[in-house]
Figure 1 (cartoon, rainbow, N blue to C red):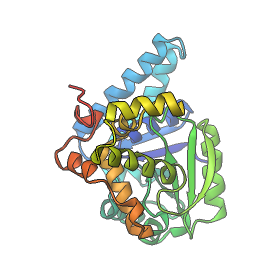
Figure 2: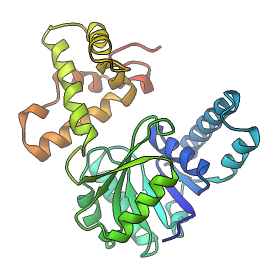
Figure 3: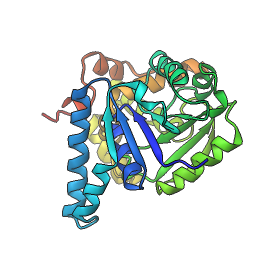
Length: 283
């Protein structure tokens, strides 16, 4: 299937990055969020990101203008009727994603591929909510999308070979290293990473050490570029909590039980860098 246009629904931290790399790769982009204010914020972030690349000499000013010209913005799902590929990047919430996929299923042509950027939710479940289950697939990008090279491609139980091969080709055009993952909760990277982060939360919760000292220990002892608390704040504590809850429900194993300290931070609205306060204060 020849694809030259990609729709992106949800243009926050992840969706905005997907818009940037896809437009930079030459695709026409239709980007959508729930209201015009969200779109304007995403557009400003895109322009800022591209301007930084110009300042660093990585792209020419003309290239920046070309990328920006490839992106159209909307708040109406009906505008996606002619998109051959739509990548969903909304909040990590099962009912919200199911509702969106059902609506897109009614709007789009039968050949449209519906992809989800979920980090933990069953792609098979989302596919089952549509009448095009064979055209549903997972495309899990990593944050920040323009920098991180990995793309997890997740086949739902129903995904057909044509859809799978099309997404692998697009991943290559987006300059990503694609790995194929079976549809299991949290897939590969997050299945390994999130319990590690959760264990760090428990170490603080139980008084083993402090967050800053654990970050120092992990960076100096494991040679990680970021400590677990720095990384958690970067990813978003609400996103981590949602993923842990999915893993606990899917696997039924107490080792995925979210640390109460993490839950309290989310309840307080301290979600990390995006709110100015997480385990660290960024204000």
